[in-house]
Image (cartoon, rainbow, N blue to C red; front, side):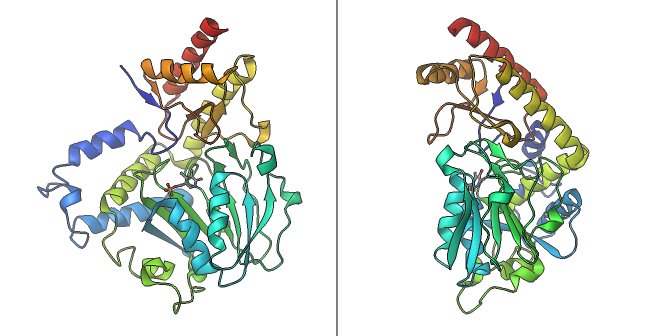
Amino acid sequence: MKIYNFSAGPAMLPTEVMQLAQKEFTDYSGSGSGILELSHRGKFFQPVIDRAEANVRKILNLSDDFAVIFVQGGASMQFAMIPMNLLNGGTADYVDTGVWSNKASKEAKYFGTANIAASSRDDKYDHIPARDTWKLTPGAAYLHITSNNTIAGTQYRDLPDAPAGVPLVADMSSDILSRRFDANKFGLIYAGAQKNLGPAGLALVIIRKDLAARTDESKVPTMLRYSTYIENGSMFNTPPTFGVYILALVTDWILQRGGLAALEEINNAKAAKLYGFLDGSSFYQTPVKGGDRSRMNVVFRTPNDELDAKFVAEANKVGLTQLKGHRLVGGCRASIYNAMPMEGIDALIAFMKKFETENK
Ligand SMILES: *Cc1c(COP(=O)(O)O)cnc(C)c1O
């Protein structure tokens, strides 16, 4: 049976990437050893990490003002590392658009003040607060946003600007490399790899180099400084070599498919088809407001909790897996990241139609 995996993360990877990784698993590039067994300082791994970095630079058209680094600890460690390096007792603005933004802002409190500039919490995070309602701090250390809210199913259609002189920081864990955007206007972009880039545990961090100089080296341990990663090519210690290798393969795949313009087109078409079906049905509902709907995580419900559970269980039986909503919000969720083909959307819609007919 063909499986379409709708997991929010760790999520499905492109089939071609999985197959190539399998093929190379026991013998990387004729070395006689797998990539897991090769020294990070040896001649086989350096080109892999160089290619991962070069691919990210090329895909995002990044200027030389930025460093691309690979850090362990996932996106959640970045919640702490960002204020640890950039806040220095100051105030940072956070836009609270969901569970992840909220967690990020909490970590800032160890190193200064987190001002919640806007929040959609009282509306169960069903929208992104309009940019002109944000109460920003003059001279803030940075402005933090979450570009795609994996749990609530919302996404910034247009990525906002920060006031002049304030670095814009974004958690892009669940929509990085899924659409075109101007990466060069950001101060720092970070993403846990397990949604659109590769294995869990690895974070991709893109940081404007001048920001790394803000770190107070008398207070921040070596491994938690951005400068350590920049100065050592992400190899101050042993990097997560397998994660970086898969990220190199995934970004190769993105370039082969035509980069972000091509992915954006297919991702938009996938999401439009699924939302179009939801909007045309009186059986399924999605709580998310039109303009802020995520094209990565489509959140929906059947008429009641019992049917939601039945939906998830029956879908699973026909190979449409991991459709259960996040435990905090319930319902159902289809995560349709880069690796999900249009065939997966078609199979899901066909199942949803059948389930509706049988359970109306
Ligand atoms: C998954 C996710 C995280 C958490 O990532 P970890 O790597 O588990 O720390 C943070 N932010 C967003 C937007 C996510 O989707």
